[in-house]
Length: 166
Image 1 (cartoon, rainbow, N blue to C red):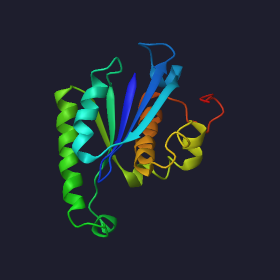
Image 2: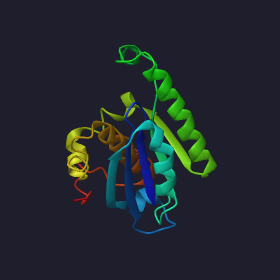
Image 3: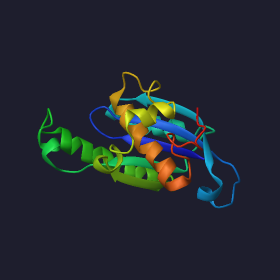
């Protein structure tokens, strides 16, 4: 299965995880899964949907999209641009519509729910830290994709003794 992590914003980050299930069709958490492949990129907002379309129509169509939920709060209010929040909300609407059109499961979580767990040490153990070097938005997308893979699809926690991810 493929999990697509997206960090919407002025520079959208995108991460694709290939998660293979050890015993397809059985209880994912009990039988486990393993991380088979990873890819990452950042794109400009105007190209995001076209890039997602291109990725989706390759041999690696996605099963689930894990996206950061936009939360209006103090941090959003301190944004460098007053219009950034509006553009981010518009982008979230576009991504939601795209995922719905492609009949993909969409999982959204606030950064405050994901970032305390998906720390750099965990990303490093999963092989995602070096992959996203110099791409902080892709790194945030990786946090959402990894969190979804572990919490929703049975991938072992990369910091656990049974992970064996890398």
